[in-house]
Length: 302
Length: 299
Figure (cartoon, chains in turn red, green):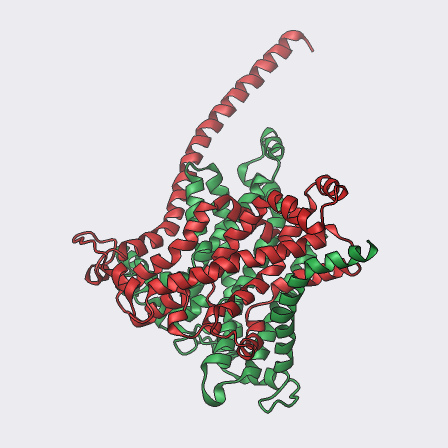
C-alpha cells in the first residue's frame, strides 16, 4: 500500500469522524434540552401537591373551593394555623406537638444507646452462638407492628404502662433495635481495632473503651440513626393509636388525624398538616446527608 | 480473666435481649398462639384462619371474577396494590434517578421528591385526599382544564375509584425511595463502562439496556423488597382517608386486623381472628424478605 493512499484514507476517516462528532453534539444538545423539559415537568408532579397544601393553609375556605391555584381573589390569612394550633381547647394541637417531642426525643436516644452496646458486643467479642443470635436479632426487623400489638396491649395494661409514655418509648426502643444493631455492627466492624487494643493494654475497661473511643468515632453513624429514628417515631401512628388513649396525651399524628375527622374546612386541615410535618422535614434537611446514608445502609440489608 | 471474657459480651447484650424478648419475641409468639385459640380460649386449630377467609372484608374474589368494582377483600386489595404500585414506583424512581443526574437543579428536585418518604403517612393520606377532592383538588382542576370536567369527582368517595386513586397516590409518596436507591446505584457504576460503550459507538438506549440496567440489579432487589413490604404493611393512609370504606373498597390487611382487635364492639370484636390476620401478614412479609435476601446473596 503506498503512502499517499494511506494519507488519503486517514484524511477521509478524520473528516468522517469530525462530521460524526458534530452530529453527535447537535444531537446531544437537543437531547439535553429534552431531558431538562421532561425532568422538570415530572418534578412538578411532586412539587404541586406540597405547594397546594401550603397555599390552602394560607387561604380561607371559600377561596380554596375555587381552587388554590386560582388567584383572582387572594386574601392570605393565618386563621387556619390559629384554629389548628388551639383546637380543641382541652387537647389542642400545640399540646400534641409537645407530647410528640416528649416521646420522640427519648425514643431516639434510648434505642441508640442500647443498640450500640449490643452491636459492640456482636462486633468485638467472640462468644458461643454469637452469629446465630445476631441473625435472629436481625431477622426480627421484618416483623410488622401488627404482629406484636395485641400482646403488647395486654402486657402494658398489666404492668401499668398503657396510656403511658414510658410504655410507648420502650416499645419504640425495642422495635428499633434490630435495624440499629445491624447498622452499628457493620459500622463498628470497619473501625480500626488497634486503638482499642492499645487502650486495653493500658488497662481501660471495656465499658470505658466503648464510651471514650468507640462512641466518639461513631458519630457519623449515630447522626444517621438520630435522623431516621426521630422521623420514624414522630411519624408513627399505629403504636400511638393503640397505646395512647387520653385526649390530652395524644401525639401529633393522632391529633392531625382527629383534626381531619372533625373539620371540613381545608384551611384548618392543611394548616394542621403543615405544623405536624414541618418537624420531620426540618430534621431531614438538617441531617440530609446522614438521613439518606442511613436509608441506603438500611436498604442494602434488604 | 477467663470469666470476665464470657461475662462482658453478655453484659453488653443484656438490655437488648430484655427489650427484644419482652416487646418483640414474646408478643410475636403470643400472637401465633392466640391465632390458634377460639374465644373460649380453647385450642381451635385452623378455625380462625377459615373464619377470616369466610369474611367478605378479607376475601371476596366474587366481585373480581364477575368483573364488578371493589370491594374484593383486604388480601386481594393488598395484592392489587403490589401489582400496580410496584412496577409504577420502580419505573418512576428509575426514570427520575436517570434523568436528574443530567439536569441542573437535580439535587433540589430529588430533595422534594424524597419528601414523600419523610412526612408522616397520616399527613400523606390527608394530602392525597386533598388532591382528589372534587372542587378544591388539583386532579379535578387539571381534568377540567383539559376539558375532561365530566370525569371530575371526589375520587376517594366512591368504591369504584378509591382503591386505584390510593394506589396511584402512594406511587407519588413512595417514588422518593426507589429514586434514592437507584441514584446511589448509578453512582456506583464505574464510569469506564460508559466510556467504553461510547468509544464503541453504542447508542444511549443500548447502553441503558445492556450496561446500566444489569448493573442496577442489586438496587432493584432492594427496591422490590422494601416496596413490597411497605405495600403489605400499609395502614395510616387508608385509615385516615376512609377507614377502609366506602363499603370496604379500600380495606387492607393491617386495617382489618386493627378493626377486629380494637375498634369493633360486641361479637365482631375478636383478638383471635385479628391474630390470624397478623400471622398471615407476617408469613408474607418474612417469607418474601427471606426469599429476596436469598436472591441477593446468590448474585
